[in-house]
Each structure stands twice: as C-alpha cells, then as structure tokens.
Length: 68
View 1 (cartoon, rainbow, N blue to C red):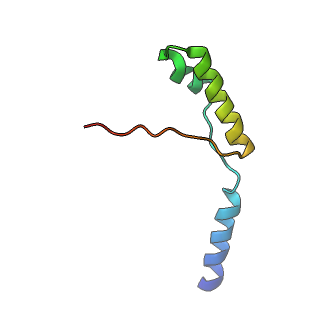
View 2 (view 1 turned 180 degrees about the vertical axis):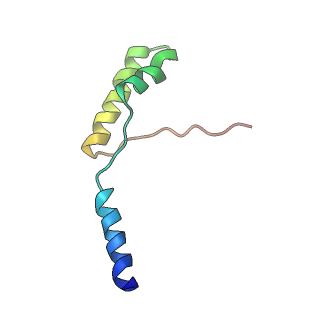
C-alpha cells in the first residue's frame, strides 16, 4: 500500500503545481516603483517581466550582493 501511495502523492503534487507562477500584483508593482527616480520606466519593465512570467518565458532576475 505504501508503494502505491507515495508515487501517487508525488505525481499529484507535480501536476497540481506544474503551471503555477506567482507574479506581482499591479498594486505591488506601483508600491515598489514609488521611490524610484524613473517611475514610469520601472512600472513598464516590471509589467513586461510579469507578462513574460505568466506566458512561461524565462525572465532575468538581478541578484544584489549582500554587503556587511
């Protein structure tokens, strides 16, 4: 029974979360870009990345190094 249940649970989880991509809401995008110097350019870039993410395309995410 355990040999049947584990693979079944594994495949169920894979199929449920296969196409889920969490992107920013429009409110959150405006909130992030509120303090930027070029607000409209920031909003345009984030909305473009959101659209690409929802389509399933790869997006580039900048990594900011941690400074001590």
